[in-house]
Amino acid sequence: MTALMSKPSSMKKLQAEIRRLAGNKALIDEHDIEKLPYLRAVAKETLRLYPPGPLLLPRETTDKCSVNGYEIEGGTMVYINAWAVARDPTRWEDAEEFLPERFLETKSVDVRGQSPEVIPFGFGRRGCPGTGMGMAKIELALANVVYKFDWELPPESKDVDFVARTGLAMHKKNALRLVPNLVL
Ligand code: HEM
Image 1 (cartoon, rainbow, N blue to C red):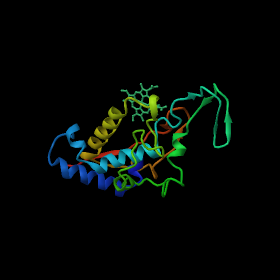
Image 2 (cartoon, rainbow, N blue to C red):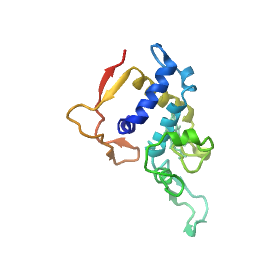
Image 3 (spheres, rainbow, N blue to C red):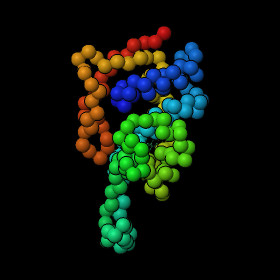
Image 4 (cartoon, rainbow, N blue to C red):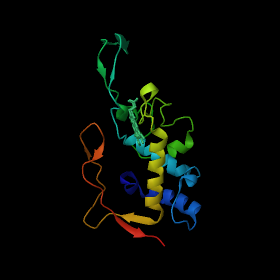
């Protein structure tokens, strides 16, 4: 919602896609989700820029190894900076921009641990086993939040605040406060 509030064109596009499909339904359900490609692209782009676990879970090397000329002893704890990987300007065009469209254009890059350039759920044997459920929950919740409501900043807020709190999981430091307007 933070990213969408700062990019009204993406919010409008998302709402148009959902409202076109939903007609007069009371709620968006799981069966609708697969027919909403822009919603999925928004979820992926959000996980690219704001991975909830930016450093994944720590790993430990079993043996001595060498990575890009760095000698790493066996038994070393290693953190993978998934946040930085997904913003690498050599891998991503306009890396800092919130552009859900990039995931519509390329079908070969996905967030589920198959593409090394974006790994919000980690990868490999210790990758997140809740990936499917995590994606479905984000998509379902977001779709319903923006389906029947238009959202605006309260008069006292001038800008959308992106400040994150420090910690192993990414949180907003200050809550996003928005005013809902029911769309009939
Ligand atoms: C958007 C939602 C979610 C995100 C972004 C997320 C992200 C992650 C990440 C980054 C890891 C570490 C993977 C690695 O180091 O390679 C992880 C591990 C894990 N996640 Fe998730 N997760 C999400 C949802 C869920 C859900 C819904 C469940 C369970 C229902 C779940 C259960 C787990 C478990 C059990 C592990 C540890 C796996 C292991 O160490 O073998 N996650 N998750």
